[in-house]
Image (tube, rainbow, N blue to C red; front, side, top):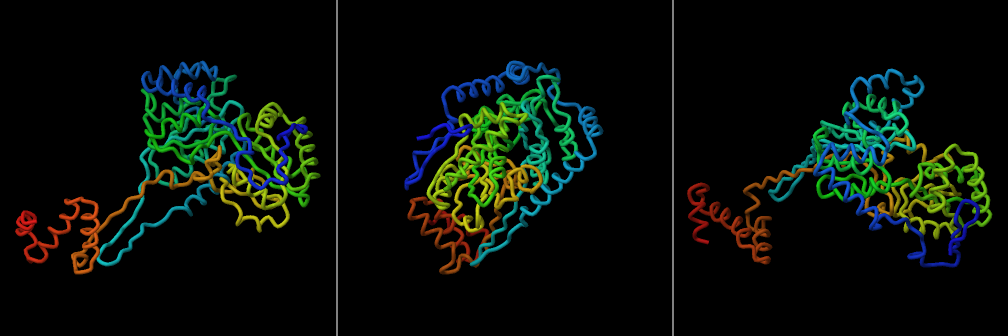
Length: 452
């Protein structure tokens, strides 16, 4: 049973060997949010820009004229950027680009027994990047989504980001990041209506081929709902999550601030401490409370911790990893003695940070891999956003005549097709074998097929 200890709920799993069914998880498939999102998607699909403007006014408190941010506004944002902030954004951009270039693979050419395979990849034509806004500006997310798409070779990259309610404008730092990334097409819309606009297209926004980027529960559900229409990258990239596995070898403040650093994004997320030391659970929980009390984002942290903040007690490091694998968190931090030795036990995690000097914040900004990661347990089958999310793989198959020699691969096709009762499949081999046997490649082909 979970009990509230300070700002974290405590879950004592000592003595437990089977953790399945005992771990609390946020729900994303309640009928209410799903039906609400479906309604928004249907309205945008049928009414286009008009519906987008109505939902933006209702949910974000912003009345829009043009949905698209002008080139002049984007350039002004870049020109007004503080030098040290521009330097940091350029560093992040370059490191992200370098990492994703390293993920590109050359065309492959191989084969045997007369069958030659060439594989190559081409980018999608148009990608849509969702960048959150409202509670904070996220230029880092713009870079973490747009740069991989551009490195993959996508010709058109579009960004949707909600405008600030107070100003009616997209945060200048986010627009500056768009300019630095090389993105010119930015729309001041957010929420499920932005996902719908990118998936279905409107009068102002051409439909995209792939949608990526994190968001709140409604944004994540919207991406699920349109997945049959467009590609949706990085599985369910919803509210932020972190699991911190810690022992007494690391200062309690390190573990506490790392629990909080994802919680400060706001509600519906997950922030867990897992330890096998009661004193660590108590000291880290106390530090979380102290830091939260003094944080300028106290409201967001408290909202996350109230439903998704846990201090979990287990019997051993091995048990801690068992719990973590069931949670399958977006971010996993190993702040414990001999952390490297635990890596072989990790099965499910979006990104892993090892050792006391590796907070998840480094991954959020400058490490290089995208911080768009699978949440809500989808790390069981999904991975971080990569160039692969914007690329299609093609195979070119060329068969030599020698494949029709006795014992060649073509004969196996005939046998397998006959076993499945697919006569035309088998005949596609037999007609060629007969033409080859006759020595009359052209004129004998139709006659041979007629004789089958």
